[in-house]
Image (cartoon, rainbow, N blue to C red; front, side):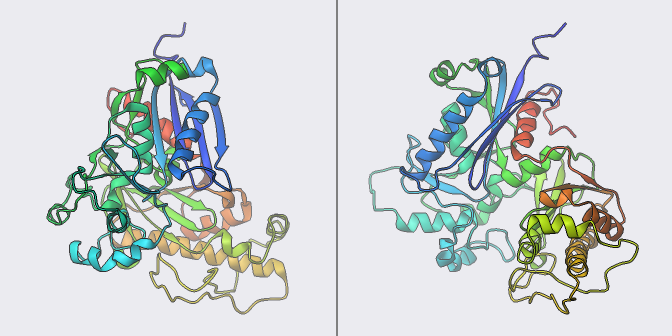
Length: 433
């Protein structure tokens, strides 16, 4: 007979680059409802208003019988998407998106504040964006300092009503010290005219849903709104990887590696940094190689047809470093690194084989680099992204990585965030590992 606990459901909401998705799971991790909404291609209202409207509409699309059983909700947003708000949570300017590089104008100030090689030393870091936003605000002598919030922070605020809270995944690129679990002295000493958010562990139950909102959406008053995460970490959580040595490779437009490790590794010179996951570390980096290179030469149909013709009994003789344009971030951090795509054989099957093996070699080099710097050695790779469906590529990668390469059972970031919501109400309070 089902118990009240077994009937509880958990909602994960993912705000990506082009839209938002929601997935509800039960206590066993089975998906019981899912829905999505695109952002308008030509926004007619302010961006933050679009987020708010999308959030509420998305939740309303979950079947009423599921909403009535929700025990917890967690959200993720794109990393380093930030906004400034007043004490009522009203945005004071348009948010800056994850890839907005206007913070480049503030990099000299960032360098004057932060230690060398810190993750904030980037034009797209939350701290660089914060300094740019502060420089553009009109004077308000009698107003309290504004609040800095990340996208996931502000969306969660709309649900629980407590302003000024974040999580240590989103706060990493603001300068938060995820090792010491505090803001570092160098950031506090800067005395920036802003209210920095209080940082919680991702998945921490913050507060129940606002009563009026819960009544309107048919959600129980006991439903907890949780501290969130970033979209990329949510995608890792979706995989179910839980043991040091397990990794997730995302084969999308770019190549992203994330390895679960007992040891923290940060090496800006190699484009490597670590996120905290409970008592473990998620170590990784992102290369500009990946599907974007393949699509410069082949359609999806051609990729499928030609891959099936590859002779996997021998390695490709071609030594490629496939990039869509000069520059890479990891495992070689060189903004001027040239693509290596020559010689190009007349046979398109041989050319594709060379590209696939070239990308796989970069993946293998990336995991070797993590191990060389002290991360837990690789023992298994789960694959997300469109490349996970390419059987020939999987065989090439397994040969070069020398570990099992398997498809990730779940790849949606919203599923990972739903797991985060479920973990918030577990007695052990961990991420499931």
